[in-house]
Amino acid sequence: MPSLSDLPRSILVVGSGGREHTLVRSLLASPATPRVFCAPGNAGIAEDVPCFPIAADDIPGLVALVQRENIAFVVVGPEVPLSLGLADRLRALGIPVYGPGADGARLEASKIFTKEILLKHRIPTAPAAFFNAIEPALVYLKTRSIPIVVKADGLAAGKGVVVAQSLNEAEAAVREMLAGNKFGAAGRQLLIEDCLFGEETSILVVVSGRDYIILPTSQDHKRIGDGDTGPNTGGMGTYSPAEVVTPALLARIEAEIVRPSVNAIAAEGIAFCGTLFIGIMLTPTGPSVIEYNTRFGDPETQVVLPRLTTDLLQLLWAAATDRLPAVGPLLVKPDYAVCVVIAASGYPDAYPKGDVITLPAPTSLPPATTIYHAGTARNTAGQLVTHGGRVLGVTAQGPSLRDAADRAYAACNQVKCSSKYFRRDIGARQFNRL
Ligand code: AMP
Ligand code: GLY
Image (cartoon, rainbow, N blue to C red; front, side):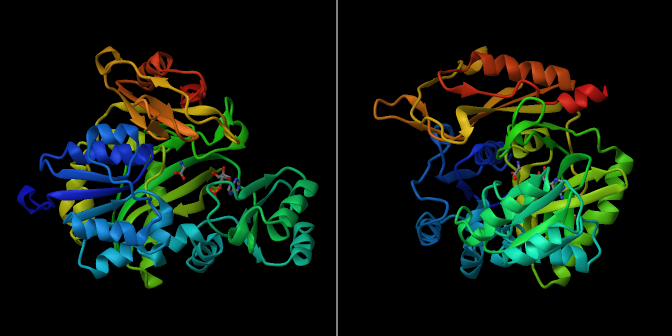
């Protein structure tokens, strides 16, 4: 474990969502008491640390900021700056970064690239075929069974996947992605992949070359509506731990998926340092990889990081400086955590911006409850207002999942905002199992 005196004194977190607010809070809690900065941040992050108005995709701007402010360590939240090579640029200047280079980020930015690696290294995943022309894709569709999954190859902010319930729907998705312009460059190639059935879970792994540490399990709720209905979103709520992943199942996931994935990525010549987020379907025949992301999940981070007793700064710094084995076994609180995302009504389609938000005073919140900011800003009058689709992530911990959920929901009801929307059933799968 890097000793406290060894840790960086100034850290920049890149991004502006609930994930980044959680990263900022967890880094501030380090016994090393570092100075933490954020770019661009949001209204809540700006209450905690200095923020710089530089967009997460402004690579030259971020590099200049790091040099000007003498930042010693950079933690990158979102995928876009990673795929644009921010980590490569900083490492070339000798600045340690938590987050992969553009080669590693391709594991998220290209679903075809990832599927090829999964198939080549025999890591469990759904069979798939790749197309850049409509006719052969339509012919292939007729040879598969329904439901069937059509995926745009590139980054599409979680919207490039259609789980088609009929041949018509699948054909329409193929035409729309390859002929239409809805997905731009991301849709110029697509995958058609067999549908997997089961429960999903998110496995977040801190990776440094061939070394890794698996973070606590969690489960996201991707659909907008209660009962997993309506369109996909970036994620409407999470809980941790996901007890569907029993210790025996986690051991199997590690042996069949995590270890082989880390080894495959290294064998492909990618020096990966950052979070490998593995989306897994727990099928009746075993765990199967749905996707890799190459960053922390949002809102998985909001329930995973608060449960860590291990110092996040020491963990991420050890990964970035090639000393991960020195961290030893992760220390995790036994408490449960639930995050309920408050969105602007209308999300994931068009939604209003600028609605005034009134938050409860921290002292009137339920115990062990934190409101992480995502899409928030200040208007010219200085009021807190909505500024994005996902506005807040209300996270609570408790001795049981029920306690944690009750606390999170009590806090959600204290938030005042005219366009407030949230799911009422975060944790339902786990409650139903009990
Ligand atoms: P992705 O962007 O690859 O995470 O896909 C978004 C969502 O689509 C996943 O979280 C799953 O719910 C669903 N999905 C993706 N691939 C499959 C598959 N092969 N079978 C069933 N559902 C899938
Ligand atoms: N919550 C899913 C993601 O971060 O991609």
